[in-house]
Amino acid sequence: MHPAEPLKRGLKKRQRHKALILVVICTIFTATGQFFYKLASERLEFSFFALLTNTPLLLGLFFYFVGAMLMVFALKHAELSTVYPFISLTFIWVFIIGVLRFGEVINPLKLIGTATIVFGVGLIGRG
Amino acid sequence: MAKIWIILPVVVFCTLLGAAGAILLKKAGSRLSLNPLRLMRNFNLIAGFSLYVLASIIFIYVLKLGELSAIYPLTSLSYVWVAIASARLLKERLTTGKLLGIGMVIIGVVLLTLK
Image (cartoon, rainbow over all chains, first blue to last red; front, side, top):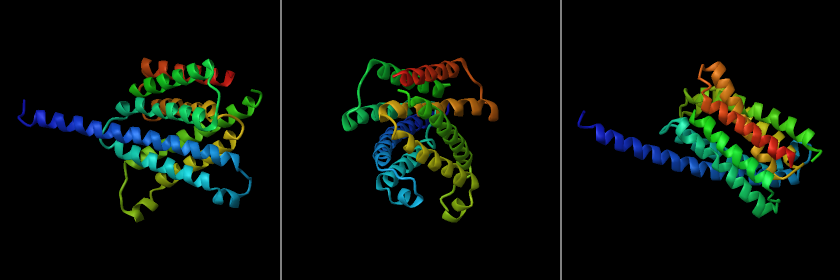
């Protein structure tokens, strides 16, 4: 074993941890983007000009964009299959936002459905 | 929820757009540079980005029709499309794990639309 091997493995582990932290932050940004999308949907009009001046919409796009950039950087340090299961966190954040900020109902069908999707996406990602 | 007949097809359409955007962005990522001039000429980047924005705007219209926590999870379908597309276009294998995951996502989507 090359003397630098343990060093390399430690480096890779730290890189992976860095990537996972970036992904978690990405999910928070993405969920925040969805929060603004919902706000934007409540003040929607069908004209192009109205879309451009819809502040929540612009904020939502911004947060979504930042989230995407974070993902791009995260993927530089880790495999997609490692990172994928954490993307499911977004569904959990959005669920919490929906219930707490928009007063949406919690019913068993929604809970089981969301949980199944969370696991499903994780499974797809792990490959 | 009778509006589901409007919501589901539109969300499926949005997720298809989003998946296409994601694939284009992934292709763009392989030629990513921080040079702004080069970035502007990266067609995959611009196309992928535009598809994403378009999908988001259409999605926002759909959000008007129902709850965020009920509609947003439906966007998980985009992961299903990307998995299927990767299997066909990039010759990535559709493992049992992936198929199981796809099945679970579909079940979850059905459960959510039943509400």
